[in-house]
Image (tube, rainbow, N blue to C red; front, side):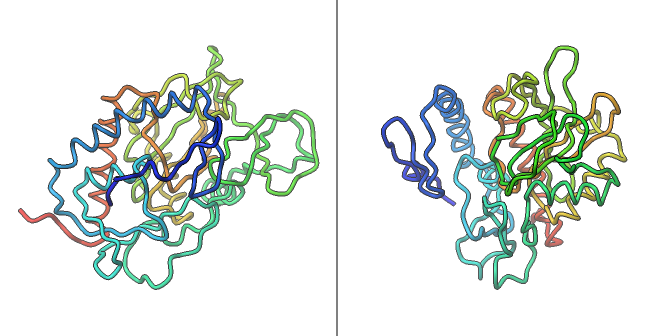
Length: 310
C-alpha cells in the first residue's frame, strides 16, 4: 500500500482544492493550510520508520478502496508490520474501507475481516444501537422535546451540528439528539475519542474546545489519556457491547461524559478515522500511532489464531 503520488488525489481550482474521490471543493482557509503543514512532518516521520519495521505479519487487503496516508489505518498497518495485497486471493484478512455513511458488505469474501457488516454509521443508527446496549435514549422528537437538543446531519464527518432550544419540525437527512453537556467551569467542552480495535480501546484522545465551537473539527487542546483512568470497567464493557452490536471491529467512537450525571454517551462512530489529531505534538502523535499499530497487530493475530514466528 504505497503512498506515492497521493497528491494527485487533489487539484487546485481557484482558491479551493478539489478532492477527486468525492468531488468536494474545500476552500483553502488558514485552518486547512495549517492542518496540512502540521500533518506533513507526521507523515514524513511515519515514512522514515517504515523501513525499520519487519513486514512479517498477516496479509491484509482493503475493499472497496485503499486508505491514503492521512487515514489512521494507513500508518497503523505499516507500523504493525502487516503485509498489504491488492489481490484478495492472497489476503488473510479483508478490511472493509469506505468513507460512505452507508456501505454494503464487500461481495465474495468469506474469511475474517474488519467492519465487513458495519454497513450503516448514520447518527440515528449509532443512537439506536447505543440505546439498545445502554437502555438510555439519545434520539428525541424535535417537535416535542422540551429543552436544548442537537440538530446534525445523518452523514459521516459532516461536522455541522448546532444546538437548538426551541422545537422544530424534523428535516430529511437530519438527526436530533439530546444535548450532552460536557463543558466545565472553564467553558471548554470535552470529547473522548476512543480508537477501538476488536472492542478494546487502542488509544484515547481527549479533545477540548470552547463550548461555543463544540461541533467544529478544530481543537484547542488534544492529549492522550489512560483509558483505565477515564473509564470504569463497566463503561469499557459498554463500549465493547456497542462495537459488537454495530459490527464495528475497527474505528473511532465519540464519547461524551455528562457533567451533571457522570454518565457516558456514544454519539458518533467512524470506521475510517483520520489522525492522530494534528493539534497534538508530533511526539505524542507518533506515540499514539505506535499504540494503535500494536493493537491492530494483536487483533489481526487474534482473528487468525496466528502468532509471529519466534
